[in-house]
Amino acid sequence: MPMFRFLSFLVFFLYLSNFITTEAANNGSNGNITIKWDVLSWTPDGYVGVVTIYNFQTNRSIRAPGWRLGWTWAKQEIIWAMTGGRATYQGDCSHFKGNIPHSCVKSPTIVDLMPGTPYNQQIEDCCRGGVLSPWSGHDQARSKSAFQISVGQEGTSDQTVKLPKNFTFKAPGDGYSCGPAKIVKPTRFITADKRRVTRAIMTWNVTCVYSGARKSPAQVGF
Ligand SMILES: *[C@@H]1O[C@H](CO)[C@@H](O)[C@H](O)[C@H]1NC(C)=O
Ligand SMILES: *[C@@H]1O[C@H](CO)[C@@H](O)[C@H](O)[C@H]1NC(C)=O
Ligand SMILES: *[C@@H]1O[C@H](CO)[C@@H](O)[C@H](O)[C@H]1NC(C)=O
Ligand SMILES: *[C@@H]1O[C@H](CO)[C@@H](O)[C@H](O)[C@H]1NC(C)=O
Ligand SMILES: *[C@@H]1O[C@H](CO)[C@@H](O)[C@H](O)[C@H]1NC(C)=O
Image 1 (cartoon, rainbow, N blue to C red):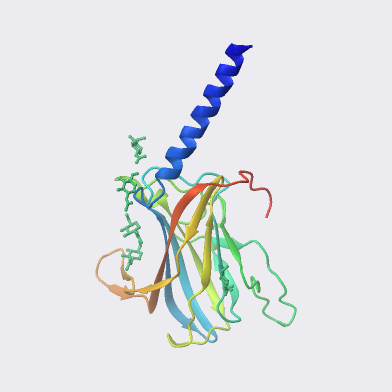
Image 2 (image 1 turned 135 degrees about the horizontal axis):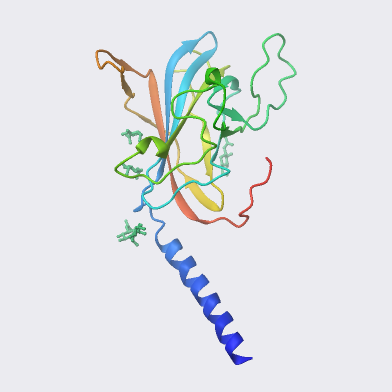
């Protein structure tokens, strides 16, 4: 069956060339994923921060079941609470009494909440099931995702805050590699009435770039 052979060869070749062009376009020229981490206020043993994920890629969306963001804490940090997102594992919080942390895992993985999350568990730009549109001139809100995090066992000065390490960003079927967190100019926030500007205490950015298709396209469970 030469025709069949020819067709299967063609299909294989098309598959391969598609793979190669995808690989070739992965030097960040099509944009990146930027993770911005703002420390907003101190708490008795840490801080409250907002983490925002921007999909600056013009040609690539993050599809359902959505992004998964990971990092490794530099010290013994824990997550007291989260709004607009959640850690996939709580881990071993057995030495806490009374207030039980949201997660005690050394390398937590965070996922977005689903649409329809009760309002008191939402923040702006959360709760779209981790789906992000490509960056475009219009509707940039759909290209970003945010969650609030209350970090404990961290200390309460910019001298004691240690940047999380080894960030990972995972999307269904797509691989990304992330650089180290870098301290940047603190974000300025302008109130809705534009009459007051506030400033983050500390801000760091992480940039992740597309690194090709992932070996295991299926993301099942945790
Ligand atoms: C990245 O890739 C694009 C398209 O393949 C190319 O035009 C561009 O020059 C490359 N940039 C760098 C810095 O290699
Ligand atoms: C990531 O993309 C944004 C938006 O295009 C750009 O401003 C920024 O410089 C990029 N970051 C890096 C590290 O390339
Ligand atoms: C991005 O997508 C547009 C529209 O689909 C296409 O015309 C363009 O060639 C793509 N650019 C790259 C660098 O892949
Ligand atoms: C980060 O990853 C590197 C390379 O895999 C590893 O050597 C290092 O121990 C990791 N750091 C932490 C804090 O886990
Ligand atoms: C950090 O990321 C934010 C959001 O993309 C951006 O506005 C800011 O310019 C970045 N800072 C640096 C130094 O890249």
